[in-house]
Length: 282
Ligand code: C2E
Ligand code: MG
Ligand code: MG
Ligand code: MG
Image 1: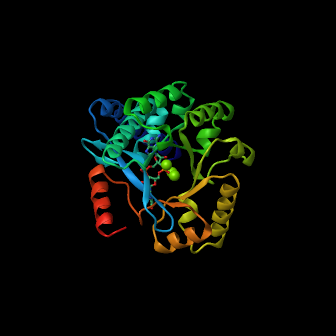
Image 2: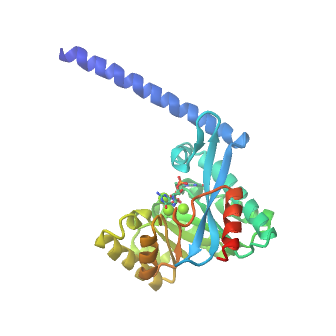
Image 3: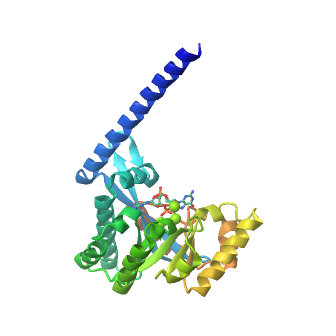
């Protein structure tokens, strides 16, 4: 009967919800410890000059070597880190580790490389961001021009005026700003015009079916034209096929990033890939 079913359904719902909440709470505790236990690692995905030019930099993408669950990708714990505020210390660690690694590469002669680090809205609204960035660069002797901070439109829009002021200060410091996942947020063109950015990354969503959907091609062409007008470097993310690579180059993208050209990988794997590319004369 209806009443019993309803109560059973409710109890079931409550029980599974509790289990879920419990699981989440445990993950939060584990994530808090992960930082101390050095379970976080950075993988680096190369960025190339279009159409098949040299690699000029990498994007740092955080991974969690979870003791029980194996290697977790950013999507599996960054949202939780954002919800709990853990993203602030986690983000500071990512920045430090990426700069430390870049200093190592520079020491090995890769002085032309840039490293890109993703920022969340919460880090952004934290007043210490500017000091953190300045101190981290100084600690590792990195010229500010070699650091790219990737922010999404929605991150930058969270508190538009405050964000703009922070971005302006970072820009004045010499750090470069990249607008990530472009085309998925709601920023106005007026706001975009005021952003002191130097790079625009076309969201993977427009690249995925680019060669089948004429709408996507039209959107990418429009983004390229907009970027040109605003003097921004245009990067396409999520390039998985040669057809996409060719098409994006013809549409005028400056740089390409995606599984076709290089997956996010460990420092060791990247060194191996570079050695192979050198041997192949690329
Ligand atoms: P994002 O910055 O837009 O990074 C691109 C994501 O797409 C990465 O997933 C990358 O592994 C994946 N990807 C790259 N090329 C391809 C491709 O050709 N095909 C497909 N299907 N995927 C591709 P990941 O590493 O799981 O990161 C997801 C998101 O988590 C990132 O999106 C970024 O917003 C965030 N994130 C990653 N690392 C950090 C970090 O250190 N700090 C913060 N705040 N956010 C981070
Ligand atoms: Mg990114
Ligand atoms: Mg992106
Ligand atoms: Mg993304």
